[in-house]
Amino acid sequence: MRQIVGRLLKPEDGTDGVSPRDILFINFDEPALLPYRSDPMILDRLVDAYRAIQRPHGRPYLFLDEVQNLDHWAHWVRTALGAEEATIVVSGSSAQLLEPELGTVLTGRTRRLTVQPFSFREFLRAREREPTTISEGRGFIQRMREELQHYLRFGGMPAVAAEPDDEGEVHLVQYFEDILNRDVVARHAVRSVRTLKEVALHLLEQTARPFSHHRLKGIHGVGVDQARDYVQHLVEAHMLRELTRYDRRPGVAAKSPRKAYAQDVGLRNAVVAQFSDDWGWLAETVVFNALKARWAGDLFYVEEAQNVKEGRAGYACDFLLWKGTRAAGAVQVSYTSAALQPRELAGLVATMKRFQLPEGLILTDGDSGDIETDGGTVRCRPLWRWLLDREGGEGWSV
Image 1 (cartoon, helix red, strand yellow):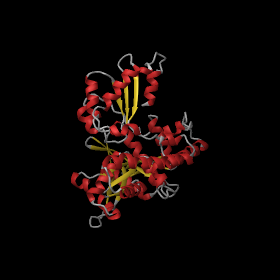
Image 2 (cartoon, one colour):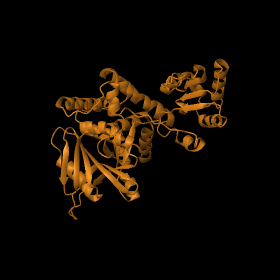
Image 3 (cartoon, helix red, strand yellow):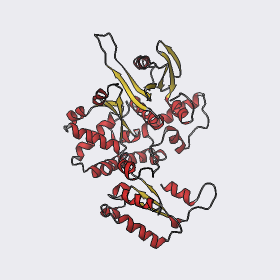
Image 4 (cartoon, helix red, strand yellow):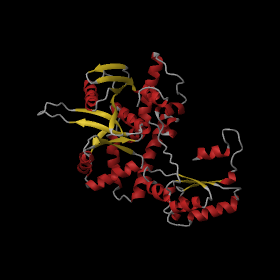
């Protein structure tokens, strides 16, 4: 929002900018404003004071930061927009926080922008290490692998990417506490804060692995409905994301275990006990977040149990890309310094056969090349290269 304000004051095309008098920025996280959360007239009073003091020249721009802290903001914004009194930008720190208001009260009047942690390329850009071209030289490849390890360790929070590692970790721990207390506990009036925190830490530690609400119940001693609510709250607060298992029977899919993914691997690493053996899970988490940012269709994971009676081996595939009524791609993550894992190759090939996909993708720490199998072509690509290619508009179709 402050970047938008900066562009209004000083446009990039060199034209005259908006007068500072025509811009009002209010942060509703300010402690002085919290007592007025339920006051239906607070926005009227603030804007009236602004008009009296600053005397804007024309139609002003109003920036309302963390607007979810007000109970009656949506109706006020609708009225102001209807009267064409101002151009209004609102922000909220929860994924679903603005859905009811944006979907009903403000239908047809909004443009949404979701701000995610930095992608790998953005991470490199923030550190002034973004490559202008992709080289096949050994030195360049080693540098990109090292940068990816750093990204898997510290994640993509903008304030962290450009700071020394020790200072970045302090920020990440504070982000975790702020999200938990402000965006979950305070908003949803959670009484058992300790249990909520235990559930959050458990799911972050288990990033990229299946979980169920019944299992959370057994581990943390909460009811199934309470476990479900906690998970939903953490998803809404941008701490976690979920991935559903593929099953053409909707009822079975709904009851199947889901996978939980950390929204930012750096935040996850800052608060769990250890991460040194988790590179594969962290790589899968980064791939999931990259696919969620770019893939326009649906996303599932595939898991089929062994059936001895039918002579069918079990297999799993990390990501099944779905578009419309059919599968559009399959992606497996095999981020290991060892040779390509036969189990992961077999899982991808089985998925390709099942969904009649002519090719599939395995993302690795270093292997590159194509493998011809009885199920189609498996393309092996280094993860760092795939992440850079996808943002550069090159590489594999997904």
